[in-house]
Length: 336
Image (tube, rainbow, N blue to C red; front, side):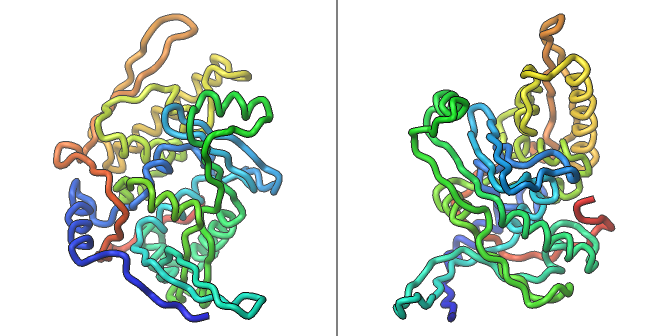
């Protein structure tokens, strides 16, 4: 199989991306599809994930996405691995493949070439072979998952799904990552990763959010890692209601099985998450506003984005950033 590389970006595109990427103190932002930054497809935990191949769950973030995850449950370590992929520059590649009939077919892919070391540096992790092994298994897990995005009327699609009927509007099903190849599992061994059809379609058709990945990888709270992409992508918002935060971790605060005690525990974890986002340099301050009274009182989390005053975050067309040096990695273990 022979690869023929064809660059997607012009020199002007690369320079423009470089300028935008440096705004708001960002050295190497992750170019995440806006839909993925404002969706709930990852459990807010690292351990105890459901690995059954028959796993299927519908995640809903009202006003943004209705997503079905099938194949296994994905957690915080999978989100971080995927965001590391979005942090690195990709190329458009045309691959010539031999068919069983003897004919040749040409397939276009979005892929990038890197090393395990570079991936670990992008995530702020210790450059150690144990982290390489953990990252390898995270990519293996991601490969098992099929993502289905339902477009159209969200309420109608949700109602049909709950009745065990397929939504009739437009949708798309595919994998997050398609092919992952490596020359070995040493730190400097080569790694080649191709976007899956679903991810490539999102990149091509949707705008990208310049996510502050330095903050994302500095966070330690699983809840904070679930909240930050949404908060960082919603540039005009200075508050978020707890119902939205609950949806971002795949939870309905007022749904069946929820109690005053479970909501109290959720709010405790939310406060820790906002403290974590402030500690990591994402937020300058935050406070909670309690609205209403009695059993149905609700909490609204007001926040100040630490870098918002410098430049408003921009949504970008499909681009890839030029590589910039990154400082020494922090001593952290992957998927802890």
